Image 1: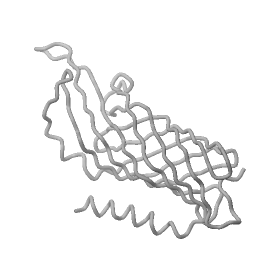
Image 2 (image 1 turned 120 degrees about the horizontal axis):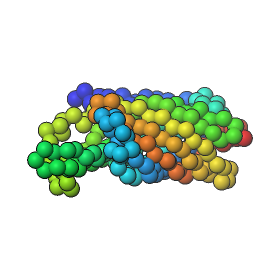
Image 3 (image 1 turned 120 degrees about the vertical axis):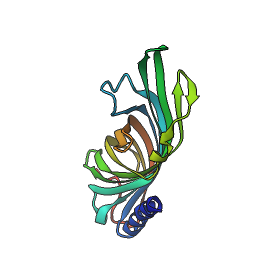
Length: 206
């Protein structure tokens, strides 16, 4: 019950903020990148290639051209793969793969050149969690640890104006949650449609 209340609170905050802002964008984004775990020292050796994506929605705070609040829904692939030295079977590969439904709520700073910096929290629910030993699926008792996770999300990017109301953006994105020590680092590519409630203010403006 507590997890559903947290998710409801996220949506209530996003909905209540909507009426206060003048400028908005809505778009889609994909994130090809790497997934790993903070449990291992060599992050690159334990990383796996993943592809994530979702919908993105942002609002200008009080009509500001610099400060925005951003939310959306994302489907994120998570995982990790490591080699272990088994005394009976020798070197074996142990891996985890999962899907992560994520609802972020972040603050975004955008300057006049189109550069952006964002940071915030996310509500996460992992499902379809699978464990493998040498590519053979195995049982694991940790299934109940992957619900109601609060994570962090940080981004650094740049937006390009294609037309008055269309943006392309490229960003480096980091997201993960401490409970599981699972995280992703990726390059995101997005396409946004801009619309304005107040005709006196346009997004983007350089």
